[in-house]
Image: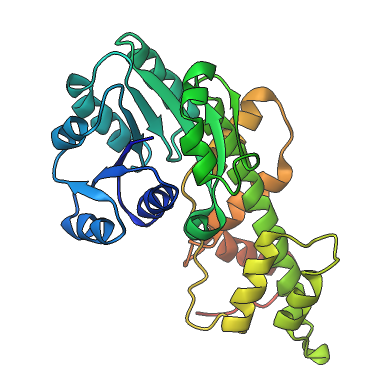
Length: 301
């Protein structure tokens, strides 16, 4: 099955490359010329405009978008819409907010254009290992696209599936990322406790390696953590600043809206926000409070 790919950054290019290896011709567009050049080196046919991309695909067209969530997705759809025809399908493989996906699906349905949301997990390892795909959209359209999903997944019969109608794929991926926040925070806190027990001189890389086999806390995330500790035991040169790309916030907002308790996800998000405060007013005020009621020493900057 032929596919158009918009967005040939690292993940988009890797996905396109996996499809090409699986026998699916891919025509790709990216506004960055270097990305197009690199794509061509991996068997992807690059084009220099969205119009050229649409023109190179046989109808009915299937076009996969790997662009940043929010306004860039809307801008891409607005640019594509005059070029598309009834029966074409757009796939959003990025981390779009599910309510935006619902709105976009409704708009495109009025033009008889299918819209599929595909929550995609796998990161930089997906090219070799395959991607976990959480798919929302019309069942018949998803079934038509089965060869694409089966090629991108770890295996044709696992690691992917239609989870519901339009919006359900991005909703599932949103919660997936919220869970990821909590898991990462738990590992980070646990290894930090081990690190602070100086009298045992614990080898964190060794412990991570032990836990990887047979332990109830083993996981792919632990595999990556153990590798990181082997490469940089003290995390030297890494700033204590943890970014978030939005999905944790969306998950927490959804939990509040549904009245679902999610304290671990909430705290993990707050810890990420805290990591960015290099001049914490709240911590300074806490120290001042302790000085006021108990005469406790205040450390000076």
